[in-house]
Length: 557
Image (cartoon, rainbow, N blue to C red; front, top):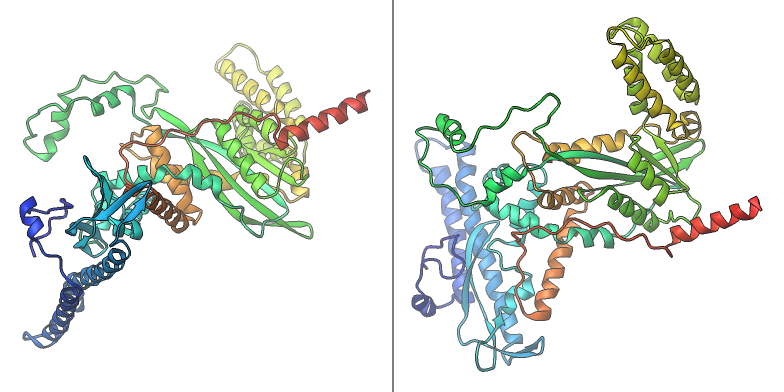
């Protein structure tokens, strides 16, 4: 058998004429090959133990054994595929009808090289082609029956590489896979696999059934975080024609050499960011189960993130709440926790009008520290005691008293004088922030009901889901491309990865069996960002709001 070159899938160094003369191995040949590999293993174990003046270290023995075990794995895989081919060929020997076309088996089997967990192996399968004049299309029934895609790596390898890419960079994923696989996919293949799987995430989230065993209270936390994205100048450099350039004299001169190819960047002004961040919105949803005066949880914690507009996140949250039985007409208790963002407040009123909307208490306490710096020296004991008094008021449900005291402080602060202008601006902003949100600062009532007063769950998820993977030095994303990675990371964190991959594999398998075309998982282009759906006037949410409005009008009359 000729040497197998992983990068070529069909002929692997053979000319077309020579490939046609290649005889496919029989089952007897495959069995003999497997027995030969097993005998080699036996001889290897004996030689390692008996030959030489002294025993090798166990580490050296395991390193030498791995490659031989991969050989056994390839032999077993080839034997399985040969048996499977015989079964499929027997079922289609008289021809089959597919998608309105009649296909017959070609006279010769076609070879293919595929890279799996044990390395590259070669197998042969029947090719079904149209029985018609002109250009004849066809497919390989074995590939379709086994769910093999047109990619040169097996599903297990592609799934493993994409799953690893949700945790570390593409380059790190490739180097890590190289520690365990004989032939690791390139970073380009890993990225295209992520983009290919990203085509299915929207349907997966929409079709995912509601979890079982939910509690009586639903908690929805929503927050946003920016991820660094490429500027238009950087995109033009990526997409333009590559310049021919001489290699740098040494690795330490590469940066110097590159800087000479492009104009010098202008110096950033104070407060400017080089991050060019685009915001992603993240949802954390879970339920709480009542046990006496306490609410126990979280139960069935679920995470979703997207670079689509914020309203899209609320539509997803509303859809998932309805799935769990917390519809607008159910009357069940829902709590929405945000950070005080006015957009989030607007969408909460629209999509969760009957929910208890509260603001993370830590955001309010940070505002109190900002106001306290205008009254007492930074780091002083007086400042700490002042903030402690206001925090006690906050937890007691007396936020209006905090606003009143801040207004007295503002009135007592002169309009002129060193630093007074900045102090007055900060005090005014804090007063406006708290005063406009008084109806969402009822922490005394929240604590009495054992509900959430903080948004630690979503803050931690923001760091874990977006920060750890998408916000590192040197990263410059395109929103549509990082969207696929972000949603796959959510699926992996939610513990649904295996179910998701099985669903996508089964979906592509059905597609191939329906139209006789071997599908491809990898994709060079990402799916578009999710769009904000039109708000349906006749939705259950709108009907509930209309019913409440009519009741209010009758009472007023």
